[in-house]
Amino acid sequence: MNPPVLAFDVYGTLINTHGVVELLETLVGDQARLFSQTWRDKQLEYAFRRGLMQNYADFAVCTRDALEYTCLWLKHDLSDEQKQQLMAAYRTLPAFDDVAPALTALQAADVRMYAFSNGRAEAVETLLQSAGIREHFTGVVSVDDMKSFKPNPGVYSHFLRQAQATGENAWLISSNPFDVLGSISAGMRSAWVQRSPDAVFDPWGTEPSLVIRQLTELKDALGA
Image (cartoon, rainbow, N blue to C red; front, side):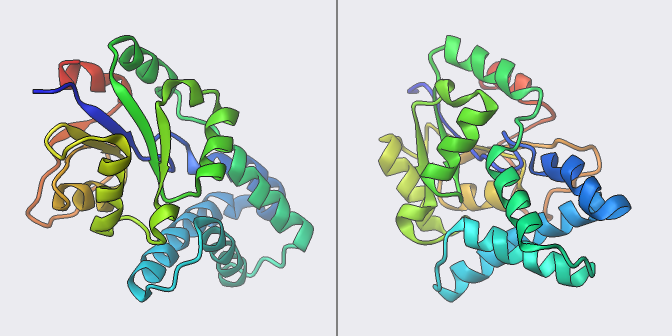
């Protein structure tokens, strides 16, 4: 079998989307974690909706609209400047602690790795550079090229074309169950990163090809 080609989801898998909580605490106080979770949930929901409606707007628009919703729902009248501050923070979110050592080990084993994201390529490049992990990736593949979002099967086919890989040797690495299910449905293999013991995988009758708790487990689990 050919060496595996790894497609790493970015938001929530490599990058901690709740890295804005500290800033949110200065803006919304005790509701910072609820605000962050609602913002993230709505961001994904809006991407799903736009994908189904075939009414594409890029991930930054989904993120901005989700921020507006969260302000309305939690009744926080943030200023335009504060909202811009939060949107700017989303472009420089931190990586999880296990990411750099995991990627370093995989790179040393000559595993070909890509960042594969709902975000636009430019935004993902900025994010990875800011987090200090861009050097580990062969490239960035964005769904923006397809004007749709995960889990549309077309975006996984797009990844395979860009990476010159086949479903047999391509793995999607993600903490998001919808992404894992989407990639398996599209013919890839997939590892679910169960970052919290409380995280539940969707009971759809399809299981991840692999379950890990930390990205540092990935190299040995793949036999790389």
